[in-house]
Image (cartoon, rainbow, N blue to C red; front, top):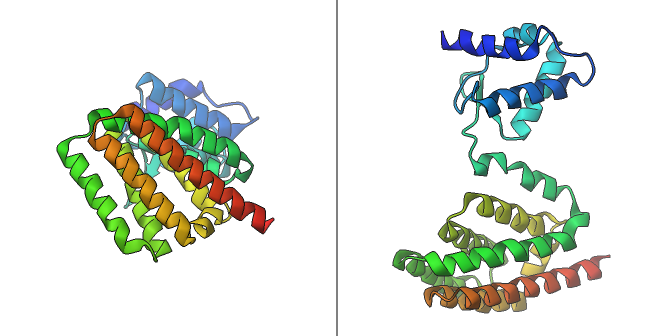
Length: 249
């Protein structure tokens, strides 16, 4: 019964069949509209492919093109056993394509660092305001672990990722967390420049010092101190990465 209702909703939206021009895009827009209006909700299963072909009056390749686009947007997901379902529609899922966009645009390197400052400074401020005793203890353990990775670039990169992820978690905003994650990964994806920079023992020591200063400000519940500390940290990362880029060019 529920499946029939979803098919009827799709039929109503298509008004017979859709225009021949931009078929995939139009199917994407129709399904997004159904989700926006509540006709399709998180967890709903879309009708089988053969029904969707009839509903939209399009070919199988055009339908599959639309479904791939919706999957890339994080709107639908395939599940084990077959079938396409509307995703959970949460910020982490819907903002996932940001990582893909940034990884494909190394020309945005300078802008990305500017954006990272805006996002991570705000995250640091919020973390300093909202950190619990457990959060502060966790940050302290992460800082202590830095001593074990001073000569281990791979271990440092893992720990560095964990540290920044923890700040986002403490800040408690899923959208800021997802954007920060995408911008962080840009540095790692940018032709491995950031990976080469983090292989420098001097940088590992500097980042360890920076992380400790950020954690200390958060432990004091000092939002502006945390903001200044993370701004210094990001400036140090940008400078070191630019040096590697200049050397490689």
